[in-house]
Amino acid sequence: MYNLKNKPIVAGIIISYQPSIDDLYLSIKNLTKEVDIIILVENGSDKYTQNKIKDIVKDNKIDLLIQDTNQGLGFAQNIGIQHGLKKKAKYFLFLDDDSILTKGSTKQLILELESNPNLGLAACNIIHKDSNKIQKYWIKTKFFYKRISFSEKEEKFQNVNTVISSGSMIPRKVIEQCGLF
Image (cartoon, rainbow, N blue to C red; front, side, top):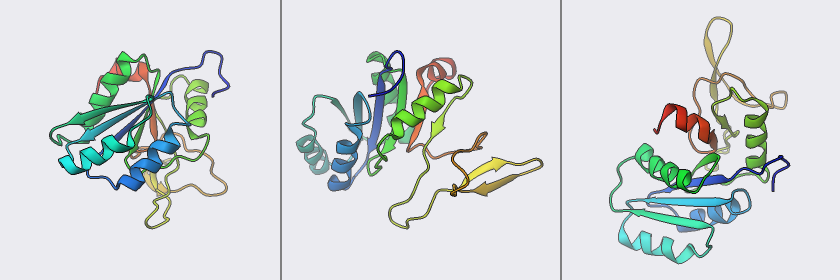
């Protein structure tokens, strides 16, 4: 799957809460081609929705972790991380229940992290499907921060102040050094 010396285990962590089942299905289907393990943390949706999710989770590559109540995104992500640590994942890719990756995104994120060992997180360029708008990021210029988005000239940004969690990847070593969310 990856052109790396020792193929790392990549865990894709999807957090769902009252998702569109169709969107979630597409997200899972797309992600199965990109990662080794999918950890789907169902974050306290109603029982009807949870049963619909159980119906679409048929792949043995997917670990479904159903929560009785929604205790927040960070709490759910920590459940996914802890599960991935037990599965020996080296990288953790975070997605929302409606996120769709472009083919090869995971490989690009890993290669970026592998080529820069001081990098603590790598994130994708996000295009919001409802508005078709490109996500903007705060970056530091010489004297201040400004918001910018990707353009044809920009392939990547360094030293971004914040990113959204969906589409971001964190190496295991960073979680071990810094702790959970």
